[in-house]
Length: 609
Ligand code: ADP
Ligand code: MG
Image (cartoon, rainbow, N blue to C red):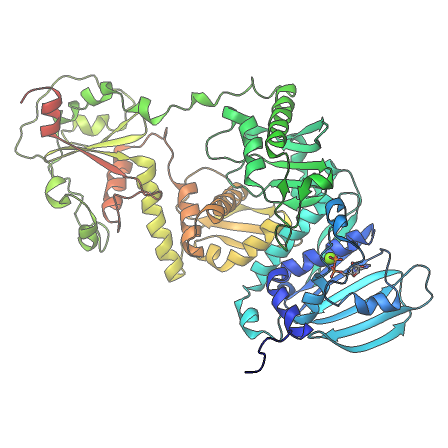
């Protein structure tokens, strides 16, 4: 039998490599900008059309390429950055694998224009699917421009796999932000579909952070600086009170390269110890300078992972440096998050004993399954555990006993108590107690309201008709470029929820109305910002359909919080609506909403049996 193994043609090998290097438009953008940085440019412009699917162009004023190099740069393993294996241990440049341009050229139409300062004429190269179509001299400014058009034109499966323009654009903005943060001294601009999204002059790191995230960040940053024999660390961490519910603003750069590193992230978070509000993530932008010989960047083609020789020492240095910075800026003593009373303290035995009083009166008419809402209780009983029909009935047969309990004057339920009606009542403005035939139930008011709103919003999203409440004073909201992209992407759904919102200039929306059910007392801008924050939080942690995440986010935001006093009417309404829900007893985080206490249990606890 003849031999069967053959070497793959370059074009095929390049397409295979492209699978790893170029996953989506954003990865091509990263490679191009890194090349411009390596070329020593101090001005870099990025132009994007249709989320990068139609065009990604990077123009730099770096060193440019010779006629030969302009062609050679598209070959596999063609690099000017390393020459021998030892060089791998002294890498200072962003690139070194010499595969980015070869990979990109295998899966797109590429046009390269480049001129070195010392050359009179520049070179233009056109290449399609690894084949040079044209190469000619041209009068050009010094520097390099690379335009990538029709990415994945020859791999339909990959092209179809790309997400919407807005989603791809968001990935590009993320990548752009990281690179712009890592190199604050470089002037960067980003144009998307003819709009200028970013215009960043060369500046200090602090100015860059403020430019990218907003002017209010000026007060939120604490500088970190530490020089040791192993690493030099510098950058900023956020004050704990500004920690967000999303991880979005956490950046580690090792020798100016953005890396994802859960281990080092842990070191930073540990430094905050218990001064962070629960479930929040502090901002940080930290730069580690380290001898390239002590790390291995070559773990993955995208180079976002690094192996360190001295991992533990680095961890310790970061933790102590951040801790010291936070301490030096006197942050620790001013904060006390322990004031929030924990769940365990709320359910002390005492309030439980006081629970008997409601039996002084009762409301013979009260029945949560009254069809107040169309399709109410009836529809979903199967989902409710423990035979709600029988549980949730007023104990009519028992005669009310007057215990002469003091009734607070301003207690909203006081009136009805005297009117001889049994009403649900609140404990610590946090739980609702309601008597049922066999005992009583305890409802977590926030979890209940979240569940109600969530199901309501899901319906609105499906029917595309959320009720809106017109604002008297429409507000404009200016967002970071990334958030602006995100809202654009979600716009139809946000409108379906009842927001009246439209684009209004650069990175700005005007909000003319918000969903009718929002009672949080926040203004339009705050509502939108919080919604976005919640949404990003879900995006980072759970895989859910987009609309469900949006419904959850708004429900989380809009639901009544512990500490809110409710009138008797509010409580009755809440209970009604809760039992009209599809899953009344499951909170948005999968925990119970309702706890049931039977008379039997109570008697046992009092040892009456
Ligand atoms: P790598 O960056 O790993 O070397 P690339 O495929 O990204 O590999 O680029 C190949 C080579 O092309 C680089 O080593 C560099 O010499 C040259 N090159 C690419 N982009 C530029 C640019 N913007 N300016 C000057 N030279 C460039
Ligand atoms: Mg490169």
